Length: 294
Ligand SMILES: [Zn+2]
Image 1: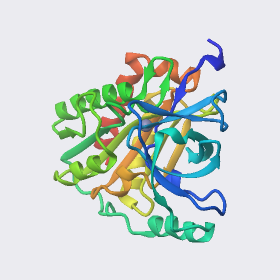
Image 2: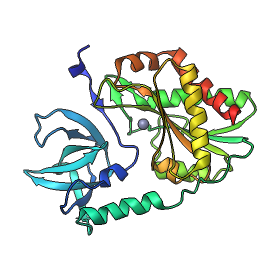
Image 3: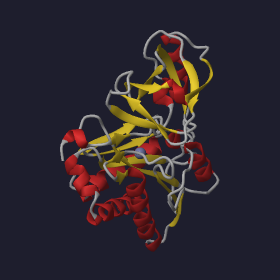
Image 4: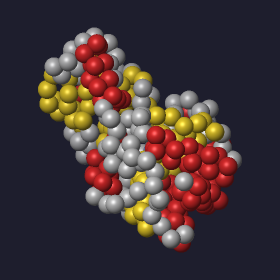
């Protein structure tokens, strides 16, 4: 298929990206008010390519650029949405880049809850990314929410067989807000939290596996390294390494947590593997081996 035929839509994992400063302007806040999803476009016109989508009720920060279009920061780049589907909730009191930097900085500096050391691991929460109205990345008819659940279910079976106590933030195609995922995990006595995702990029050549942990969480970093090294050992994909990130499910979980991206759905090679039972089984086995290695 041609690259242009790829239908991409990304749903942000967390809203912090949207609050990153772009320039010195007054940002407005609002939420997506539509029955379905709201398309994010490359430029402020309806002929412009679609670069992703936002889900209904998602809160955004945007700049009114006129003619009914709002500029947002979307996955680290600039995107545009029709303001016909945005209900304004206020003008951001923070109007200059420096002050916004401070807000972001403070959030990054606050000590993560999940800084406790890794003890003996008995109880694990697996978090299949996305679900329900939030499909995650979508490439043609391939949905991130489907592969994340499949890998999580397979991993849960392996871990249970190995004697671990496993629970999942979702076990079917339901929408669970990011905060609710962290709250759920915090309501259990889980020793670790593993969030399962597949990646997407505007760069169709981007490929490979990467794993994230909350900045400052040494135990989260150890968990992330274990997942990453077992995943690249099992799966024939590129090793993109381990990185800190302020994802909500990493920041708000009280136990050591990691988020693994099992390859890029937007990359033809990675996607060809992701669509096989073999790769999903390898992913699940990598999670088991990582837990056993801790
Ligand atoms: Zn995802």
